[in-house]
Image (cartoon, rainbow, N blue to C red; front, side):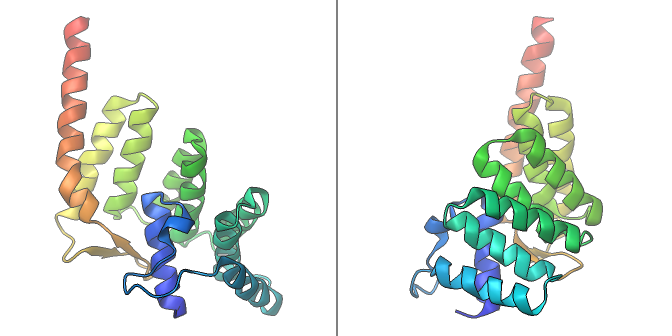
Length: 194
């Protein structure tokens, strides 16, 4: 499996919150990802270039897939600091925290990602989900509205950020209207009770 295909697989897993083990097969049905081998590749890459955000990110993903939570968080955090202008590092942290259910950390990671690229419809959609879970319905509705507006300008199934990272946006296209409707009804029912 090429590095590009691994990167796309990882980005898909990251942003949709799948466990890496359930993302272990490529769409072409090739062999499962050998996460120990991927971790070793990342460690070799770090040895050659200790300040490589890419290799620290890859190491974090591999550690996470292998269940080493402490090392995963350390590597993903370092990756985002080494290249703080690349939103993908923050999305990696977001997914890590999403699987652990830590909403405040998810929100912080998404805000950092969106600070670097405010045009990502998937980022706004995911931030809306986090805000909704936190009970901030008006803010969630605003994020869903932004996501809907942004996704309407995306041609094809992927949004490509300024750094060349691809994000599948079909879920935003298909679901954002339902999320907006649900929040609008919730807000309306809350106002009716007051």
